[in-house]
Image (cartoon, rainbow, N blue to C red):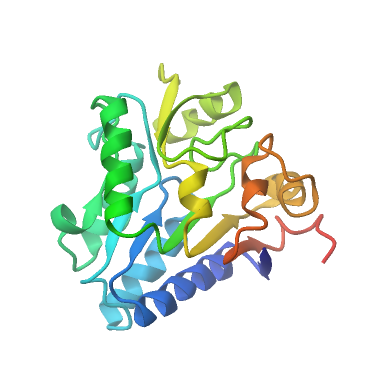
Length: 242
């Protein structure tokens, strides 16, 4: 895993966006996975700006979302689908209905797993995956103890992730499961871009980069994946031995 440290959140976001832009310019017909949440919002802003400037043509790209909370759809403020649509896809010159594959948290989750898996397989696996590192090292809803050989899966959420959900929804919703792309999809991706920022991520970033490779820290499983890059700001990198 290559580690790239940027001064702050803004510089980190710009660097990740430029990485994606460079990839798309080399391979226009690619499958891109993007996450919801707060960390990628800076990346989205730079991608939208690049598209408006004519530096990024996404007309041949396909997109797949990383995950979704159980029982949530676009209408729920803070859902992954709403975040991705409002902050990115709705601002890009793309055909969302044809080019973007969202998880539907309100659908039969087992059928959703099969549908999303097939979408990825039909595109020959993910070309570039963008993944935020959670406080406990989770990737999407791949929680500690994850099976590294799973594709899409339904996951019971641990207490840390359930408590973090409050910041997205403004209240504690009764959400016990998430549906997510599995670790096997990321292991098969051409490139994996991990992102983490702020001092509160310093401990888990150190574990991911320098600790044991273990499913107790899911992000660490991607350390030896060819084409994996970790983008962090200086605060998140402060405990690394670089």
